[in-house]
Image 1: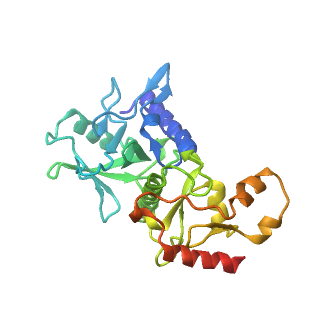
Image 2: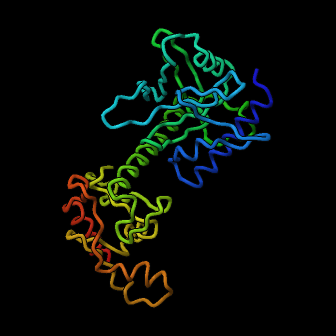
Image 3: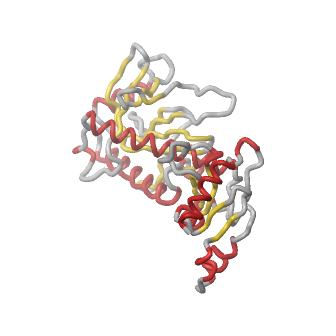
Length: 303
């Protein structure tokens, strides 16, 4: 049975993760994760060099991790979301009684919540919590992991692995957010972590904006359909306050140029008019002219 200390430790970890998400968004840098969270009179680590992590002095894992993809290398374990909307997570090695595998088995029996760190890119992780081990298949050396509500209310003793419909909804919601995070990561790398309009380099203030929205038939989450924009210019682009011409020149709506207001309007928006867009160095990453042209026509019609 889980101890009160273990229960408090896991709840403290979840609270800490919530704070990290408020700071960084869905994707949290490894540098922040590796510091661990404050608990009792010290700090507790949440991730180790192996995929299954058991805190010092414990016997049940606190987290599991899928390593991020590395160019030219195959992931060490083939973890994947299957058609039944559950994660198939591979054992540590082939020894079914390895300490870490036995720990995950105990987490399943006691219905203990875990943190799942999904590697998006090198040094970038998408944390999902609480996650629960719901099945164990020694034959395929695989655990099955389900996801429940992120916010633990009233203590996790009351949580149960959801119905199939609930599980499907939660998993799909997670996958959408993971794909959005992957899109943002690729776009920011292509644009050298700079706003394409104002050159701001604070990544926590940068978004990956779609040129053609994701509801558009061609609005795929690919870098040529993306722009790295700071939050104010992303909002201005989405609301047709500014547009981007196919020749990569920024155009601010005429009524906005005529307004008289404070320095944010003057320097944050009006000064962007006629600026040339910052574009990626690799030709394959540059915004597609046909996407910009279609989006620019929408801007013109809205103006």
